Structures are given as C-alpha cells and as structure tokens.
Length: 489
Image (cartoon, rainbow, N blue to C red; front, top):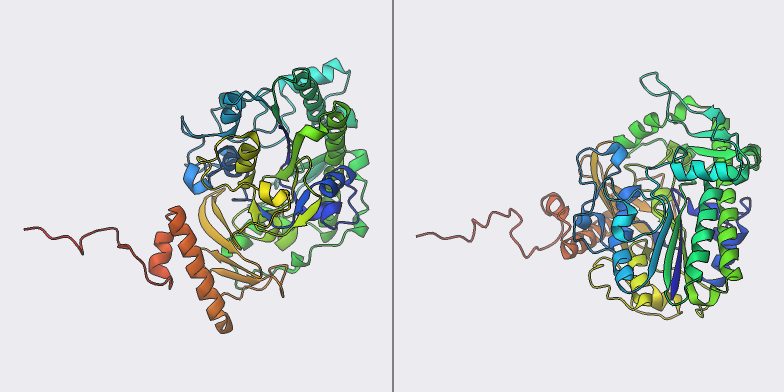
C-alpha cells in the first residue's frame, strides 16, 4: 500500500464544496471526497501548527510529546521531539518504504525532516520560504520572476504600530507560486518512487497555505467578489461572558481597526487561495492516475488546524477553542473502500495509527491514535462519542482543555471563566451558557467526563480540576503528598 498525504495549513472546513460551500470551486478535493470517506467531525488535537504536526508524527497528544508551541512565538516550551521518540516515518522506513515530504515542516526547530527519514528539501518556517535555495533554483530553471508583493492589507496594533500582514497581491504568474513549485516537486518525486515498484512509498505534500498572509496572484486575489461574501454570524461577537483574553486577541489581530469591507475582501482572498491550492492538488492527483498508482495508493487530505478569517472578530488562531479552528476537513480514500460520509468524532491524531495499520506496522507506540480503517471500510465499530482537545499557549502560556460531544462543548479555562456552548441552538458559539442555572446537569456531567478522560490519559491538567470543580469521587490523593496515609515510628 502506497500513501499520498495532502495537507494544508490553517484551513477552514467550510471553504470546500464537499463541505457545503457553493462559492469556492474545489473540484479536485470534492472529487477526492466523492470517491472516498468524508469525515464531518474531524478535529485537530490542538489548534497550533508545531504541536499538531508533532502529534501527527508520533500519534501522541501534545501534552504527552511535550512539543507545545511554535518556534516563532515560543515562551519556553520544548521545541523538538526527544531522541528515541517513536515516529511513523521512521517505522515506515524500517519497513522498507520510500518516505518523502515536500513542503512545510514546522514540526521542530533543530531536527529536520531527514532526521525522521524523509526525502525532500527542508523547507523551514511557518510561511512560504520564498528565499529558499531550491525554490530560487526552480524559478531560475523555468525563467520565472522572483517573489514580489503589492497591495498589502494590515490593520493597526493597540500600540499604534502596523499590524500583522494579512494579505497581499503577488506579482508572479501561477507557475512561479510556491504552491505550484511544491506540486511540481511532488510530481517529480512521485515519478521517482514509481520507477522502483519494488518499494512502496509514503509521500506527503504539506502546503503552507491558506495560512495568512494570503499572498496570491491577481487571478486569485480578485477571483471572488467581496460583495458576494456572506460574513460569519459570529462577527457579531461581543465577548460578553467570555474569557477576556479573546477581546485582547481581537485587538492584537486589529479587527476593529479595519472597515468591514476589508474583512469581506480578506475572506474573498482566502477563498481564492483555497482554489489555487485545489488546482495544485489536482495536478498531483492527475499524476497519480497517469502513473497507474490510484488503485494501490491511500490518499489523505486534511490540515493542522483551522482559521478565524474574521469569525469572532479574530484572525489566525489562538486561545479560543471555537469550531472555526478546531473542526477541520478530513478525507481518506482507501482503494476498494466505499464512498461515504461519517459523523464519528475523529482526529488528525488518528492518521498515524491508520497509516501504520495499512502498512502492517504496530501502532502500539501511537498511544493516542486510533486506526480509521474500519470506518473507511464502512464498518460500524464501537467508537468514542466525544473528543478532547488541548491548548498550551502561543504568544504566552495559556492552558485550555475542551470536551466536544454531539450537542455541547465544554472549555475549561483556569485563568478566567469556563465556557459551555449548545451547538444545536447556537452553532456560532456566541452565547456562553456555562453559568446558566438550567445547565447545571450538563455542566456537571461534562466536567466529570472530561476529568475522567484526562485521568485515563495522565494529562495532569486534571489536578487543577480535582480541587476546583465537582469531579466526583477520586481514587487517589489529590494533594500528591501521601502524608495522610504515612505513618512513621
């Protein structure tokens, strides 16, 4: 079994036609969804790049592998997986696989993809590394112009300075874009791997987009008329009854310093970016077909986490566990499996065990990962009816834990107020009902369920919950002192 793993960065689930968007044209990803399994409740273990990507490598939740922050905003956390940590590419390499990665790495600082067995250029950082020697060589080989941007879009920071660059117009043709370059390098490696049919392969393409800043050529910058863009309903966010950090993050992302027309334009450009990436995905999938590999290659499409694009008056991601950044697209096509849509709660983490399962490699070390193979093959196995996610901070430490079940979502925020949302009545998560008296039963039940799951995982966030909330009877000394039982004579 070969593997093709297609991954984007900071990708909203509602930007794909397969997930209901009627304005964004994504025919290639829609075709993948129509011929595979589309998961409607696919979540990231944490909405931040490096920890999520380290979880994919290891099959371990972030609290366990302890790579908890991006290098660029790290506030003291570990930045690389310790030597000897189990990772699936090393296991595949040991099983005789060719293992390649084209595109965004961002799963560590000192260690490179080659340290985990990957072939391919080491493309570092969180944004398109347009100064990378391989990219510049590609431009030269193809007589293409260098990177240049105009029409920058940014707001104003609380201190009066210029805000983060959110979008810009790229003065290059499509063939010179970083996305086209990555697809070209992927196709080259596909051909190389296909030339040696004695060895199966795992090949990943990790696009840097549609992560902000949205930098695309004219065609995609202007592809969507901003006047046709329906703003997210949560643009009405007041932050009433919400953790204060959310209002602070909104100021950091300069939302209120820009006219609402700019938000519409940003969403339109983001959608254009998605369409540009879909075209490059199409080039890769067409090459798989041309090489005769389709019937022996499992294809994944997903991302590391979502993006706000103005939802809740926010951009990027951060210390707010809304669906916009935690629920993501997830499509898996295994040859011979039936086309279908599944509504089980699954995770980016589950890709690890799925790959290992299909490759015939033990997934025992991927302790927080579950194989999706039974679901993709149309079976109805017993499956957990809720899902946990976590966050540890970005610009500053900020611990959070989330429990999402069919109707409700609970978020525990030790620094301020907790959150509870009724996603049936309030799908945009505007009303925090955590303190509503009528929610006492739901609040208590979910708090105890989250506590139980964290104890089972040994995610020691549960120690705070033991003393602060009604978590039921505990079977351990919550003080960790052991002095109550000790007797010395």
